[in-house]
Image (cartoon, rainbow, N blue to C red; front, side, top):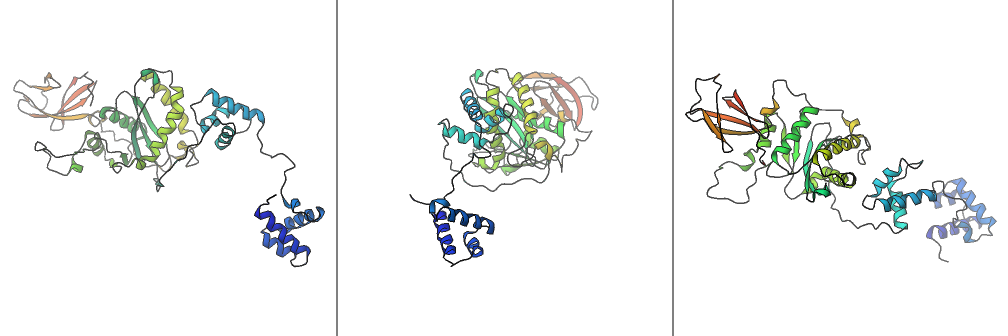
Length: 393
């Protein structure tokens, strides 16, 4: 029989004690054990006629934390019932059924023992983690394209905003298309609920940042591309919110949101499996968001709702109308008959509060798709028109 190195070392040191070469105190220091434990080992060694087998640990009692066979059976049953959920999800489902909380690693060991789980080797490049010091200091925003609603037979887009400090899922919405307007509406909802945050952190999508892959003789911009504002960038500047982007082709910069989307795909997809209506799905998502924010986060070891302090969110000033911030702004020249054109339609200005006529005047249009067009002249409101077109912008 081949004995472990620790057993051989104990046999050698205890033999030296019996031969008078070491005392018990010296032996305990050599074995890195307490004085009492060395005494117990020596007594067991003598009672076993100085056999090395007496130094091999042999369990004579069941482990105090050994799981009951019935719990193992429930783990196996749950895994077979929901084959597409992960070990953490299984542990959460069993939390209400069994008297003691079971750890996901225990679930993993049970499934590996019963050949129901095959861990995949993962190669990850280590990245330096960062975390803001306050709630609202940095808000991350991203979109995940996925088959969130399998019954639709196509991918849909999950747009989400997460606070970097608290890991609070500030808002999330499932939309058919990842458009500028859908992203603007979600940012607006977060501001209406929480207030003005300091900085928005996004990727390099064209709705956030103007990117030109090549130059053309028809390309009219002569300034640095970083200074060319998108509609979302312009909206944030009007509210005094900073705007930063990840480095191109480095999704690791949005690791917190990527991790969140992975978690949402594991937990939400089984719930949305039989849903084919976006409105119904978004109600489920809002309920799920409330549950998520009250759940202990695996990294912070705290609930997101308990990390709202310190906060740098500021209340929205009463003189700001978000309809004139989160909109699409265009310039138009009014014709001689006080009309202007937009989206292949002609609109007649009939209110002349600031001028006798707006003929040849430059006006600014604030377009809210599906709602209305607000006309401004030199930052003064002129008139509002219904605008029901829902074109993709």
